[in-house]
Image (cartoon, rainbow, N blue to C red):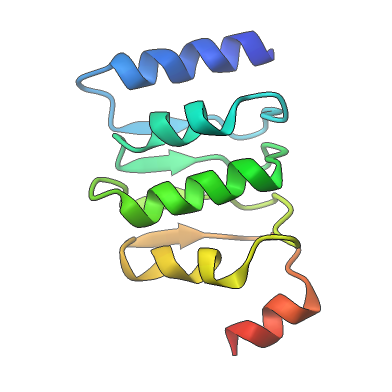
Length: 116
């Protein structure tokens, strides 16, 4: 999908009163504003953004929103680059979520050590 299409979907997600799950894996989110992305996911219970070329700012905004949200129970951010994301942002949502999928997220050696 194009950036314009992704933005339109996220804007409709924000406006929706009934949508609970959003799966947009295998799309390029590189040019989608982080604030729009985090606002859109805040109302959902399941968010799948596997292999979406997320930028660090977007990942940070999503993780912060997941930590604040009372509705998100499942989050999949696998196959995105987490090497510059502070480990505390990665671990904080774990206590709130039922399912957190982070397959193939390319953690740095420092991040792996910090987890343990």
